[in-house]
Length: 308
Image: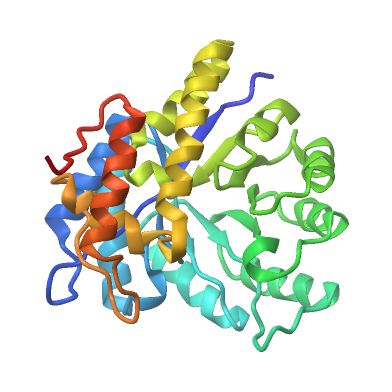
């Protein structure tokens, strides 16, 4: 069976100067991702600033997402790291009402640096999945949450729930990733989070990668998948090299995710919008420095203004 390969962009949500969802800008941004043949995560924790969304905001974002993406690309609701299962149960109800078919369950963050036991993790997942008919993607992000999901536990959950269809791995442990793909790659769609090990994931038999970089350069992130599928290894080298440089530029010195992405998009006359407090954008001077570096990458399809 041929695997379906994809790059998944964790979409930003443009907010206006009053902090409200800018519906028109969000629609334009989603259309840009569709045009580049990217899959999309919506209402995500970091790039989408989902922690700041009110219930009304969430309903609006999910409604717009379905209207713009349904039937045009693969997409799913992302959510955020919860303190308790009830938060994700509520999130799933919003997704169900929006008639979006798939949602992610983020790893449990019980607070104060405490790592949940395997039994607590399994109870958490079962509590949520037992209360939703949605297709489910799991999330394993040891770099951000501090621990990886035990693979035997993932297998038990997949044995119990046929609705689990994918997992995102946000770590750098190649042994873990290789075992995850070897044991579950024929049952789950497996992406790595971020571009750092994208080629490794593809080479091991995974489905691709995900991240925020595609908000700025969706054609570039898609070109990595296209080059791999075409066995165009020189094209892959060039595209992946540009992507890793772009990732470094966006994430440098606290610019990670929307702090740099949104002001850079705005400077390119694209739909970045405003951040919601307490997040603040990088400085105008920093934006110009980064634009100069992005311009030098000569990314196809991206018009980057630079100061004379």
